[in-house]
Image (cartoon, rainbow over all chains, first blue to last red; front, side, top):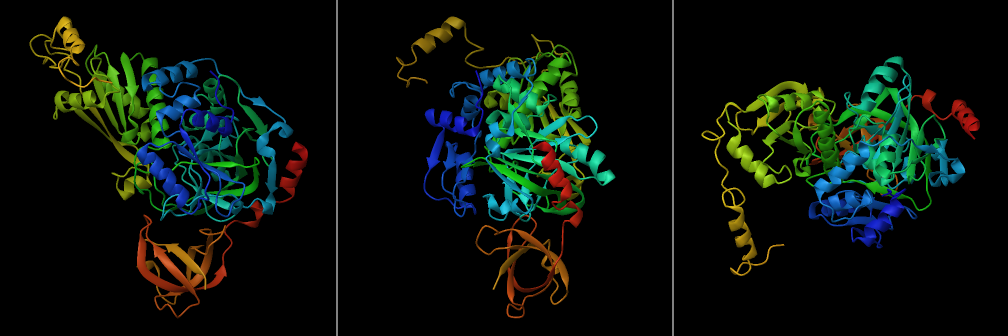
Length: 482
Length: 97
């Protein structure tokens, strides 16, 4: 299975499966496009491809590119009807395989170099940055994209999704937390030395490059993209700095992050479903070059109440990266699932409860890891519970978690400025609290005389009775089950 | 008349007839709508006092029903000249051709 090399191939594949809609009438970049994408997310509609943008002839929008598991399956070259556990299995298989290094192509072979704007010509207002929500602090140019930077000492490359607001025609501001990969490099290695940090923002990256940029994986994103695609991603050198960008991206903005300038950023409708983080002076990106393909497609993610691709993909990859981490530590888990509707705040971990304290051990590993700042609840259930079935998980939570003994609170942890429940002080200093819900039967209970028996169709009837009832279900007069 | 918008925590952040430093964004239609300028300006709740109009939003994007007039006294440079496109950029470009 090969991934799509760009969004054009991806859109064609989505159209074939009924997962994209082309909008041919003119759409206004000033809130109308955002409202379309928001409604798509809330109604789970196909991804909109907007062919005609007001004020910007030749430009196009693609909204909510990966806001459903169907579209995620298509991006991986799978049948859109593939069920989530099988998509997860495929993701784990690919990301546990050997790294696939990117290949560098010449500029003449890179579509993203078809148009090049340098210096004063590199004007952000030449791009149709949308006002995504009414009341947003600005037009957000980077909502489904990758910000590429490099560590000046190790030369390791980072691709990450850090929202970027157009401040004026030459500058953007962005929310970059100090615990993020970009934040660590900038605040430790550039800002204290007063050195400008080169960056390249890739808008409309190949779909699996976006998945990689979104994933909290320790594997460098160019290699991770290759592993997901099943072939190397093609990169090309930037015009103004020593960075490389996907050759088949739609738009690239190059420039420097200023060590000594901050401009206001936000507010913005966020993945939690609220506008939470305060308007603050934040990191400032100064633009030196813009390159783009002919008829470029700007990708838009509209964050808000579920389900947008930020929630869906972060939940997907956070859950699977925690799965890898726990297995690497020898924890006898059966799986990890993070429901997107939790706005990636709740981890559900299935485990074979072989020893006492295992739920706390899982919580400590999860919250103490690099993944930890992004979620604050871990629900641990045993291997009789289907972690993908919320009804079963919720039933276990309500019935097996002792209110006095099994809720373990971790105070003074790392949080994010976007946590709606946090105080203004906690948001400003990225502070958080965490909780583990231990839904395992106590290991010292006698399994015969103390552990309650689950009363359900599949647990309290002999197999032959179950089969007889199922075989006769329609004959009893019930509608056929799908 | 130009229409501008500003974000504040409270209307008390906009004392009248005092020179203020504000980041304001234009609401004039076109490609530059919503771009910011950092300016020295005076504002007044008297809509006839200054030539342009200013509307106000609070920290989470809520629109205030109070409107102001505004006079822009001057624009402040945000990005120091040392970061502007220059010879080093042209040299890098030439080397990478």
